[in-house]
Image (cartoon, rainbow, N blue to C red; front, top):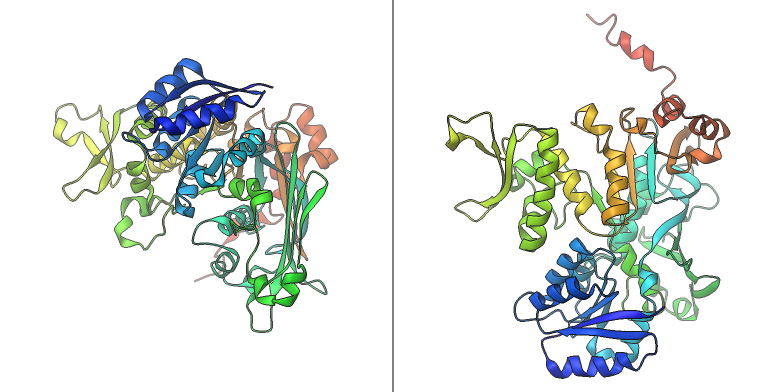
Length: 506
């Protein structure tokens, strides 16, 4: 397959050198060059190349902003950042913007050619997960599709299951890593399943695959030492069937302190399998809490807080092109859910703090009062806003927790179709969501292999794929909606007894 490439750099000598280098490759065609962000966007529209090779530092817009715009309008075009910035913060921002590769100029031309040839390796998704002794689960082994609906009783482990993917992201996040990811969860003893017996190691193994069938696998096992510190017991990486990494190795045995870090989190050590680290870093989790959005100053929240503490700041800090385009799409959706809404926009107050403002039609006689800020929005409005922004934000796996909360049942019914449309028309990202909603599960497009059933047992929760349960598969294939099939499997057997709560209390 011939790859059509656009070169973007504000230095003519760099563009010339890249053109010579890439034109020597028999399967590469350089379709054009651009010296600025604005010119790059115009030439992307004109040529629609397969790949854009772009510098970060440019005179008008930086490469990360340009990447966001390209991915917003042309999600199938891949962007590679070619830069002299080696800091992890730049790499992380670039990956969040949707770039598929990050190459240092000082690394030489061979590295750039290698990354371009391996471009499809970045279009990954989780295909399989195995857990041992992770929180609720003694052992879990399930396949994953492009969408997954996590269904089960309260406290059956749905949030803890999603947290595995957050943990993998935290391993490779700048400022994170193995020890911090465990400390943030209360230590090994808080993570380990209470029923763990003779094999107390916590094990996570995930399989990844791209559209061309290339597979990766990453396995991590850990426990704690006698001082209660986390200790890596095993770290392994496979590309297809080739074992690339197998720890502990000789150096680890000579210096056990090395087992406080994974190779995955170390840039100098993960070169052979960096696509895994890059993919993990794109995982996004959202569970917006309206009160955090309304009063962010009252809470100590981290950067990229999934609960909404910096939600407004993240919208405000997005590039104007991306922010305005997304808010236009969100306004259209909100006008369907909230017919009185006339307009939605972002404003700053006198102190420079950002606010989402909505204008409503039902106050025509007092136009000065027709504008409300997020402080006045209903919980449902804020939850829907957060959901819509989350769907459009980023390109990696998206983790959603009970997206139906505070929403009208008629809106909830269409969440699966909305996700499907976004995945197939806008951004083919993987989406995993937990739900208790019969309305959401009434969508006829939910397949048996997209359902993960969480079933509590005496030894912890089991997770079963709907397609592996004969009764569930048969009923879904007969045309029954998932709500009528899976909710009975997860309903507490004595739920009717709640009707007699407080009986006899005086």
